[in-house]
Length: 188
Image (tube, rainbow, N blue to C red; front, side):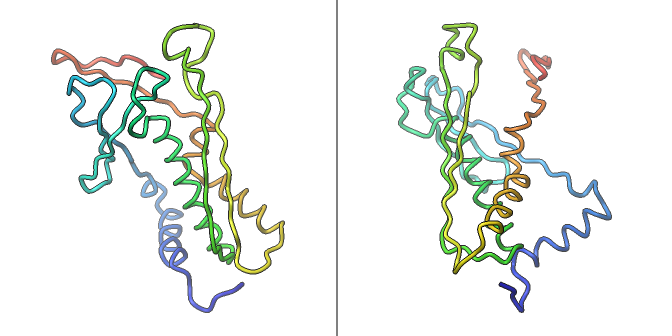
């Protein structure tokens, strides 16, 4: 379905693509977050402030499986939400590029973790999620060939930053500042 006017996605992304082809260093971005009010005396609740937010902290709680109340989203929920949000927006942008109009889209993520690892109950159990599943439900406008929908999902999976980070892993370093001294605790 061709359009006579350039889509908002194309209007915003084409100049960026052109710039990044000429200036690859300009394509590097940095996202982040930090906890706030971390020493409230409550190990099961806190708040995190995403780096690019406008002072909009997200409250979090800890899963009941590790002693929390599970009364706020827990870190695993936030990780799942990040994956769902990234895949959703990536599907929408790729659909726009492919001139596929979507009348509805929802992305659900489930993540499975054996918490014996993080509670140090069984050293043979890895710490972390052992599996994650994404379910994408979409309704294109009109009839769209199954091959085009498969191309859309394949391109979205390839382009989704959070999905690819989880699938491929990433180096994470932990720096600890304590007693006015900085040390690197771990590097993986």
